[in-house]
Amino acid sequence: MCAANPNEIMNMYPEGTSGSIVIRANDLQILNENYADANEWTIDGRPIKRKLFAAGQWKGYDMMSSVGGFYADPASEHFVLISREGMLPYIPVTRKQYLDRAIQYVTRYYEELIQNAIQNNAALPPQVRLSEEYLDKQKTQYTNAKNEALKKLHDALEKSTKDGLLDTPAVVRIDPLLMNEGTVFQSEAEGGCMLVTENPSYFRKELPKYVPQFFVIELMPGDPNHSNMNFKHIIDENFPIEKLKAMIDK
Image 1 (cartoon, one colour):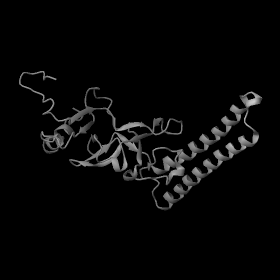
Image 2: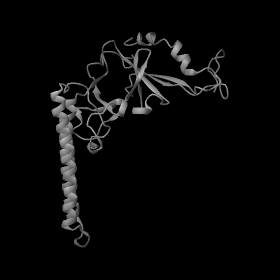
Image 3: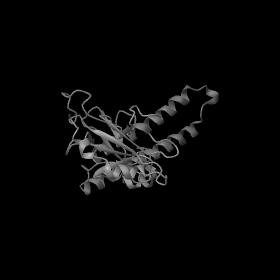
Image 4: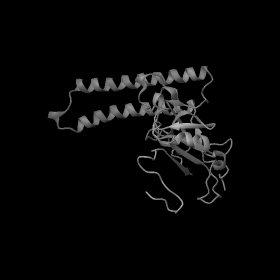
């Protein structure tokens, strides 16, 4: 690749490093996907989303990774949100909000599984239908899974109430149906994800759409053993993050 201006160059292989930095404005890529695609997983009509996993700090700002747990820190890319002072473009979902929806979701999910199994079997030709005995075993299996999940959710509700944690952020397993895998709430260090919704109060609609209201920095440090100067070290030492923050709403 060649630079556009005559006084600019771009190092290529083998001198160039694979590191890079990407800055995006007004793009909440740190909320990378909905928690689950079902009607229960909304708050005031806003989808509940997974926030990228915590991965320490960078220049005093929270750093995030697209992978969680043990792999968050050594990941090949990290993300940093730069927003208005004391205000975030997202709202954490509380434990109480999560548990209320999870109980509804798990109940409906397994009841629909049972109903669909009965209806689908009845729609088959008689000669290939499941036996009543087999169908009963299937219904029992679904019922036991539902009851096990609901017990864990109700136990988590009781404990969170007792410990005064109902209004704290919900950091949970990545799938609401994995109640048989362990505890309901799981720290980000263990691979849990924080659930959030977009914050409608953050966005100033009177501003033109091209005005940055927040930034997300994507850092890809590249090969630390490259013979060239380490790209991440250069960015860590010299990137003027406060100048970027000063551009918000302007």
